Image (cartoon, rainbow, N blue to C red; front, side, top):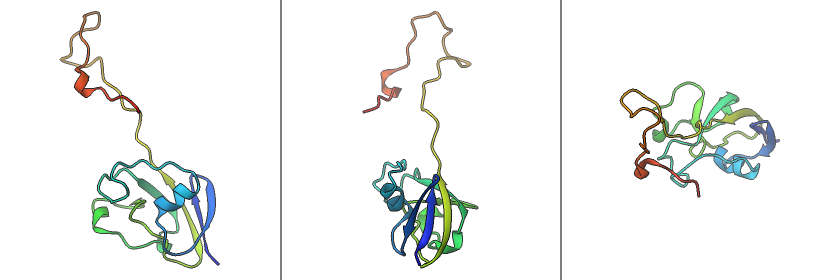
Length: 121
């Protein structure tokens, strides 16, 4: 009997081997990342709510994490049965602060330097 894996309230049956990232992709769940699943960017963070014992041991790339947090690209299903519940963590919307101590007051012609403005593809 495979592991019942729930990510962000979507459920799938999982056999040992695939990473949580791969299973999220299978469910159509977007997981933030910029390192192509190499464990370098630390963006694919998931909180494991239940079933940590059914997952692989922490990798060196996860050494900075504590508690129930894992990198989904480094965490693999290891059991043949059980239940794992987890959810992705997302950063807030990136934005340029336009009012802060030391910035020109509103009403001036001041604009953020274009080198710090990110455009979405």
